[in-house]
Length: 115
Length: 110
Image 1 (cartoon, rainbow over the protein chains, first blue to last red):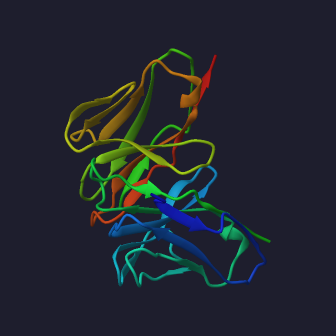
Image 2 (tube, one colour):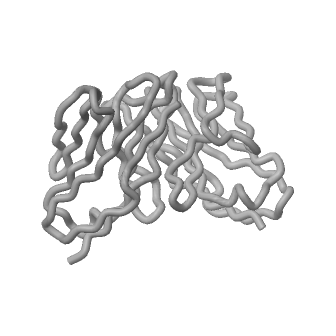
Image 3 (tube, rainbow over the protein chains, first blue to last red):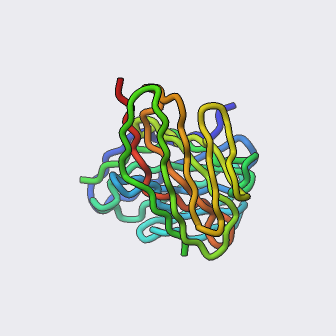
């Protein structure tokens, strides 16, 4: 099983550029989330989805857009990149949240630098 | 909203026992989870507590006290490979996404 696949693994952008971080899972999970990880800040929730067509904001949603047109895919869009968005981005999926038998599965991350 | 507090760093030697504490504030409680992350890679699930008490999985155990809004991860017989970051996490108020603490970096020396 591929699990959760994130692309690209690395990306450098210039301030003001837009881009889409891709996330795909092949486990038929309903719940998907995007996190950003910065030194000393842990994993902060950006946006999440509880199923196709349903998304909601997390802790730090500003500057990001998401959509969920299929169960498998949950892309994250940076509308106008800013240096403050330099971070490592993780996508995660699970059949449910907070269930011992169904933990979150994380992708390997996208390392994004904005100059 | 949800918030979690855990120590930023812990150091220990091989073979020792270490405890990583986590206190949380949450509007609704669905359980406390622990995740491990090596060298900035993908976090991986370690354990989950929904009820009070100790859950044991090999060298790792996790404890929860709901009345104290407190839990801990206990790592026994430490090995060098246990050097990693450890995160506690609770579901958000709606139970639809996980909120993570800032993480504890464990350094194991020989």
